[in-house]
Amino acid sequence: MNIRDRCKFAPISLCYAKNITVNEVKILKITKIERQKRNPKRVSVYIDGHFAFGINMEVAYICDLKEGREIDSDFIESVVKKEEQFRANNYALNLLSFRARSEKEIYDRMMQKGYEPSVIANTIQYLKEQRYINDKDFAEVFIRDKVELNRYGRNRIKSELLKKGISKELIDELLETTFQTDTEYETAKELAENKIKSYLKDKKDTQYRKLSSYLLRKGYSYDIVSRVVKEIINIQEE
Image (cartoon, one colour):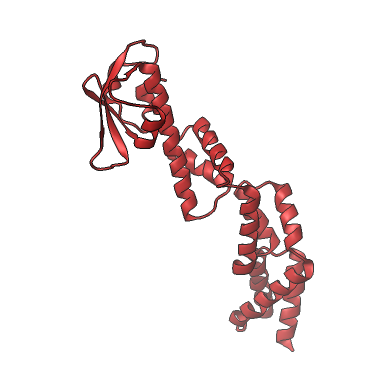
């Protein structure tokens, strides 16, 4: 892949690289580096008097870019890769600024954005090392929120966590420590007691069907749903 092709993914403007490929051994010189007016966190790099590319100041510092330095196409390629990785890391951090995410969620969003798998892998490794992502921590918070705020049963929670890439073994372990049958039953019963009020004008079989569907969608097991619905509807008939 030549520099111009890689720019599609970076993305980085390499106007000066139109005749440069990674196979060439041509000595070039950085003639000017200036801060960009529209984005002071980036600089414009000129090679042999021509604008070559724009790059983040932090990447420029890491790569030791300075006026008068002689470089070749391999070096430019390495700078492009570092800029691409820098942008990828920042994109992931921006995603995490909105809410916590699982490793798979980060991977999927970055794939949709067009980053290469190797770049994504590096970003995920960086996020793990910095403790920005941890699937166990994520799953624990997710379960707590869904139980306390949404009042979901274990089936729905498990289904949603599987979609987010959390392992079945980890999910089962965490759910086992969170749910107790009696507690789950009481929560389902409380939900049913509130929901049945909107079905009072319906026939008994319609009430049974609607209430069962509601609780099943909430993620409660068929056994719990069956017990709760029978009890609630019998109470309504008394």
